[in-house]
Image 1 (cartoon, helix red, strand yellow):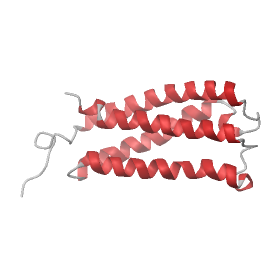
Image 2 (spheres, one colour; image 1 turned 90 degrees about the vertical axis):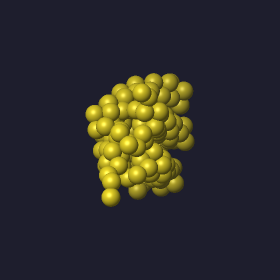
Image 3 (cartoon, rainbow, N blue to C red; image 1 turned 60 degrees about the horizontal axis):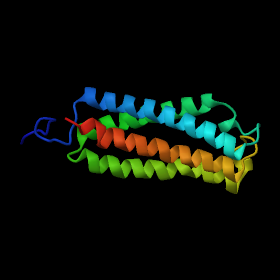
Length: 148
């Protein structure tokens, strides 16, 4: 029985490349989400008591935290699966859908998650941030990391 390594399976990446892709995803997503934060804030003018958009630090901290987790998940998938790109795509889509649940809950039942007064516009800004980080992260791990 043979083992699958980065040299025999072009989909597998060396660990250092996974870490670099994670760094690209984090930096790119934080920058892009800060742009969405500022433009979205100017357009929708969220209530000042709405904590997720009260400060850019929340955007920086949560984007970084969850993309560090994504990098660890990709490293595990890359190490233990035969088709990491396919498995990663499935896991990433599931994670995106699950990440939207708290945003939707802010609209359906804001008292369940006391974070200030959410408006439709403010929640849409958060949802756009999720999609922006998702797109950049998918690009970093599936395209950028695999460039030779």
